[in-house]
Image 1 (cartoon, rainbow, N blue to C red):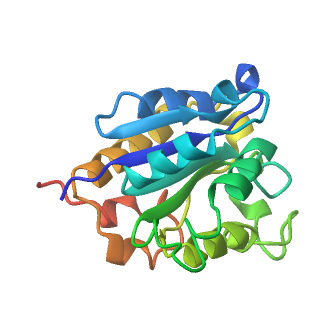
Image 2 (spheres, rainbow, N blue to C red; image 1 turned 90 degrees about the horizontal axis):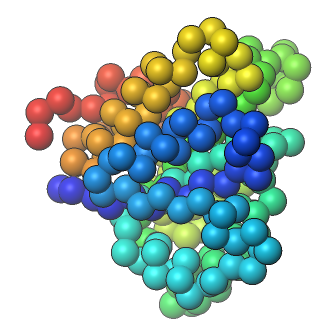
Amino acid sequence: MKRKILLLFAHPSQHRSEVNLPLYKAAKKIDGVTCVDLYREYPDYYINIDREQKRLLSHDIVIFMFPLYWYSTPALLKEWQDLVLEYGFAYGQGGDALQGKWFLNALTAGGSEQAYKAEGYNHFRLDELLQPLQQMADVCGMRYLPPFAIFGSRTAAAEQRLKQHVDAWQRLLLAMTEGRFDIEKGCKMSSLTEQLDELISEVI
């Protein structure tokens, strides 16, 4: 079953982006993926709620793509959540518009993966820090997938890791749009980044 992806990209400092921007540009090459640059569309933060809700209705998978800022999303993406996911549309009485859609975060973190552990610099695992977004998806009736997360993003280009990240990202998007992604197994994983081979069938 082919699926349509809505990718909401939020990066307020794209001129400094060494990883997010290449990932976003790579996603734009995939058929079936609608890429929305929120900071380009809404530089004044005046979000067109009707347009955004129509976008949600016409897609099967919703992806938030962003750099992890102070353990959360950039401000405009939070504003998008607050305004677009209205009572009666996304949740509450009559709010079943997003029921059954898939949701995942595609994000970069400047620190190493070891820093996101109880004994690490940040004291919490990434999945713990993302629990507000997981709860958002749950309240909206969406199927929450673990993140596609790239750690050590500040050094990814210098360490020549960028190409492997971009290739894995495109492979994931293709598998999702072409119906080759195992959603049941994916929901039980801790990460889509490291366990991608187990989730994708190479035969359509």
